[in-house]
Length: 217
Image (cartoon, rainbow, N blue to C red; front, side, top):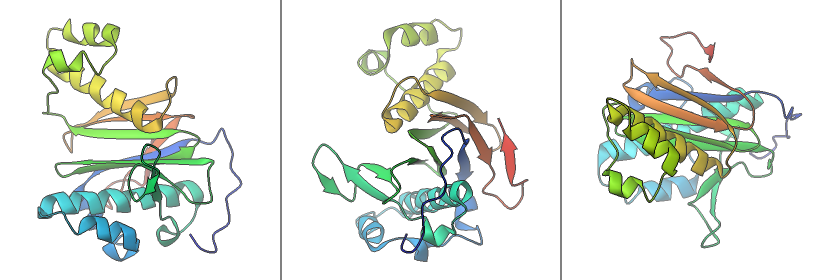
């Protein structure tokens, strides 16, 4: 982000988030692999499955688009970095914007679906295919809050409820904080379940040229 000044950060400003298919992002006219940093390209090198590689590329590009929407910067100036607090090394771990600690960023990718978010303070996002079912329950007991897990398993069809709970907990984990605002929805067109955890209310926008640019939830 060389030469880009920090925006005047309004701590009450809504976060922005988007979910898309990998194909939609890779077809976006403003986004291309040339925007990726050298360290990101090095991380792509070991990925042997083309679909998996495309998902990773698309998630990183969608994150740039979210940052651009939130800050007004062009996508080429919205490059993130990553740092792992556990091992003290860069190139993996939680993403962040160098030089802009007040802006939180997050991304997610899985099986042809990608999601990303940017906003003031802590931000986390997760996406999963709507047909996926987490489990088994014995494993989930070790990972999810007992009361929420009990409520989900008590529903007539616990599968979708467990998936929503899983996605919610992943978004909070990525944000690194409890007690955040949650925006959750099912994108039926793309077959995706999405959760955004953010310090301020989140607004969604479409990364596809086929749909209106911005919508509120």
